[in-house]
Image (cartoon, rainbow, N blue to C red; front, side):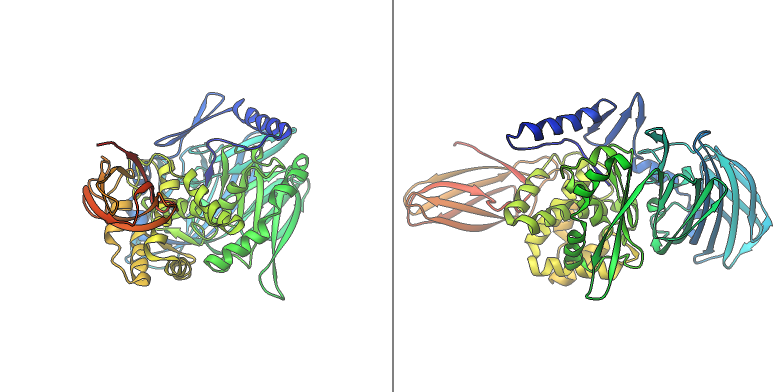
Amino acid sequence: MKVKKKYFILGCSILLLLMLLLIIFSITQYYNVTIGDGIKFAQNGFSFSPASTEQVTEYISDNQLDIDILHYNISLELLPKEKLINGKVIITGKPKNKNVETVILNFYDNFNISKLTLNDQDIKYRYEDNKLALFTDSEIADTFLIGIEYSGTPESMGFGSFEFSEVDEEPVIYTLNEPIYASTWFPCNDLPSDKVLADIFITCDSSLTAVSNGSLINVSTTGNKKTFHWKSFYPIATYLISFSVGDYVNFNQYYKYNDQDSMQISYFVFPSDLKNAKTDFNFHPEAIKFFSNTFGEYPFLKEKYGVVENLWNFGAIEHQTITGIGRSFVSGSQFFTDVLVHELAHQWWGNAVTLESWKDIWLNEGFATYSEALYWENESGFSSLKSTMNSFLTNFDGTTLYNPENLFSRITYNKGAWVLHMLRKEIGDDNFFSLLKSYYEKFKYKNASTADFEELASEISNKDLSKFFNQWIYDGKGKIEIEYFINQKNENAVFLQLNQVQKGFDEYNFSIDIEFELFDGTKILKSISIDKRENQFKLEFNDLVKNLILDPDGWLAFKSMKIDK
């Protein structure tokens, strides 16, 4: 997920400036977006806010950890005028390590259930507190089949988990489940670690197009209704299951992954935005190629990659194989390429390699954010990497990166990216990019935790990285803050005092590059290791020091202040 905070354009073109102001105006007329320790959204007085870490923890019962869902067959009929859905879901699952007597699913309790069966038999159940509990007369030891038929109006929770809306008097319906809101529209075991296969059938007016995860298997017509059957052949987490319905036009590109074979890249946009979309989206084949070369081959080659336009005007969301992007970000000016790059990167980081639990959210968002920096480095060189990372050096105070207080704060995104950037410097480029490829290959279509990533990083680099992970991910808050001064008593000796003064973490261990500029014009780069709060170094040069620059290439998350003594 990528949520935009501000929009900038540099340059003197009045036309481009006016276009940017028009985009900003169109958004701010209807939306107020604030991003600080957390993210809160308001639309015409109605607030959207993502779940806190505490809410995520309370959402799952212990019983849900004992079952493994294998497959969802989701059939929905959409009635946009009435804002109703008729649903039929068939769930295939099995116990994990022990027999179970009760199966509990996440399912918001505002629906009317007309039929509920377990293995084709009527079953006793309790439906309250947004949980659906099925009770059996004997233990379930093997594969089970749950059938549920229901109807009602889904609640729109979180970022807007189920939306009925309109564009040019045509219905637009779309979903956004992250992190714990899939259950606002279908019953499920809403754990990111319970990845499944899925068939999704969406029935809507025949004038509309339904877009979902995976491959389009079939479109059938009955009267004035069409049913679109989408199938996910690869494991998918519940928070990534989605659909979008609208009066879409479709256009395609292709990613050629070898001399004989190509994968279709499919775009679905509102007719009036077609020209803009063709301009904004055309970079995708080369971006997929770059990420495939850098991380490993695109993970869903048998299906597709795609982008679908919706009305979620806070950014974009990385639904598996089909990114959803808000209409305000389809500008025809390529202002929001970083948004699309971020969501594309999630196909590797989040969708193929999925976080073990929401405590590990940085493995999704930090990786996708750093992928933006890697993309711009590839496009425009090291200076673009440096400037992009500098734009990510925001306020990291308030929470740890692992198990953050707010899942979608800028800490998760920006500090997560900086941790990867610093790890790259810590273990070297060869090890770092080998780590990314190995991590992807080892956990592709599976789940990974922060501990899994640390273990693999230590193994590949042959270094003990426990201090690095503790200070930047598990324990540390904020970033390094440095006060320094120099005292040059003669031409040959410089005394450098460098002190850590941050409050978020007592004592970081790190190395910092320092560029010394001498009066004769010579520039000398030295690397200094820091392992205490207060540090003094004696350095010898052949001339007086005119100036010094801490971390000239931008590899360390810190801020500094020179003081006079």
